[in-house]
Image (cartoon, rainbow, N blue to C red):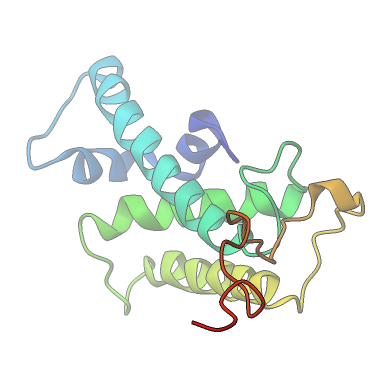
Amino acid sequence: MYCSIEEVRKTIKDDALNALIGDEYIEDEVEREQKIIPIIEEAIKDADGEIDGYLAKRYPTPLPSPPKVINKFSKDIAVYNLFSRIGIDEGEKESNYLTRYKAAIRFFENVAKGIIDLGISDNTQRANTGFSVNSNARIFSRNSMNGM
C-alpha cells in the first residue's frame, strides 16, 4: 500500500466518521473505529489500483520504494474515495477533497505521458513498454514451395 490506514484516518475528522460508516449513529468511539478501518482499507486499495493503472505505463507496479509524492497522492485519492461514497458537495468544504483528487489524477496522467519522471533512475525498474513475439520455426518458404 502506498499509504497506511492510520495516515488516512488522521485526515478524517471525527464528526465525519458516522456519515462515512453509514446511516446509523455510533456513539461508542471504539466501535466506530472498528467499523471505519475496513472502509478505509478498501478506499486505499482502490486508490492504489488507480495509481498503479497510471504508473504501469512507465514503471513496474507496485513500486517497491515509492517516492513521498506517491504517498501524499495515495492519501488524497483514498480520502476522496471515502467521501465520494456519500456524495461530495462541490459548494461545501468537501470540494477540497475533489480538488486534491483532480490534482493527483493530473499528476499521474503526466507521469503516464512521461512529462513527469518519478526519479527512479535504475533502468531495471522501468517498465518494458515494447513487445516481443515468439513463434515456431518457419515451415514453408518460397524455396520449399517452388514448383507447386
